[in-house]
Amino acid sequence: MKAVVIEEFGHAKLTDIERPVLHRPTDVIVQVAAAGICQTDIETIEGGLVAAYGVPQFPYVPGHETTGWVRETGEAVTAVAVGDPVVLHPVSTCGVCSACRRGADMYCPSRTFPGVDGSTPGGWAEFIRVDERALVRVGADTDLLALCPLTDAGLTAYHAVERALRTLPSSTDAAVIGLGGVGLFGLQLLRAAIPGKIVVLEPNLAKTDLAYELGADEVVTAVGSQAQTQARAIAPEGFSLVFDFVGAPESADTAVSLAARGGVVSIVGAGGTLTIDTLSAVVAELTILFNLVGTHTELETLVRHRAPAIRSPYTTYPLADFERAIEDMRAGRVVGRPVLLP
Image (cartoon, rainbow, N blue to C red; front, side, top):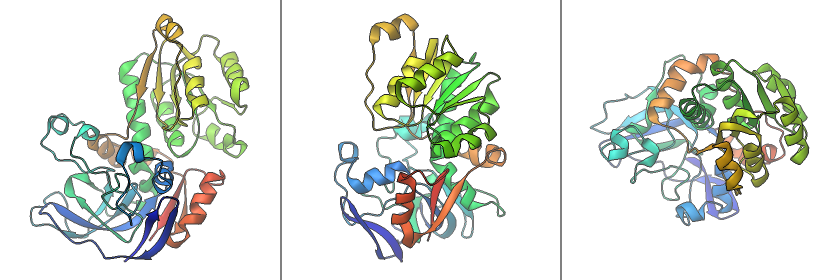
């Protein structure tokens, strides 16, 4: 089958590899319909996740945002059947540990993270093998391309918004930093959840109109300290909720600076460094949340019940054009998600 493989850090190519086969009774072989490109995939290719997952077993197939159709099932599989359209949760879990039993999938100590963990092949291929616990069956008429970005970007935003709202149920306004693949979903979910003003901080002018269409009341296009100043002018007392969907040092610092007293700062983008003036944070009694993807139950809720009301922008590329897709993403030419079609 065709697949993108990382041969060494910084070098990936399209090549032919063996099609996956069933190993365990709960294994499922999925024919990939669509595979999204996330910043995490780029970090995987470039070696940016070694501290978290070690050096991959090269050659390694990236990709963790996947939809498709069930083509083979192990003898113990009961959740899906051959032919079912499915979306894949980014991780496969054991189902028996204390974390799994309380529904906290991402805390499972024996979870696998296809396309990210360095040992489990991901979705930038024609077929992928996963455990049935990772699958959510969807309707036969479901648009698997539109659902693809929801499996990670949408799920991550949904998890972050739900956690923040549970932490501060009285939230009335919010600041959204970054309108990339995750931020687009975060904005829409917030607009459906809170009555007050939502301000988006996004310097890419090509995204301004879309921000307003998706529910922003104000859009700040300035950068650095000027962005903070303009956002503070809109909400002098700060925002009850602030979401950093970028994950750079400056965006995390901006997020903390924009929070109101008693507010919640949600760090969703990874890769930056957060420096906190603890005295100011204590005096303001801030709550800072860090987020990693979301639960299987949240993914089910998102794709089965919330998806019809959510716009899921994407741009498709043939699997062979993965390098062009990455280049377009880096250059800011893609609104939403680049999606690969095997």
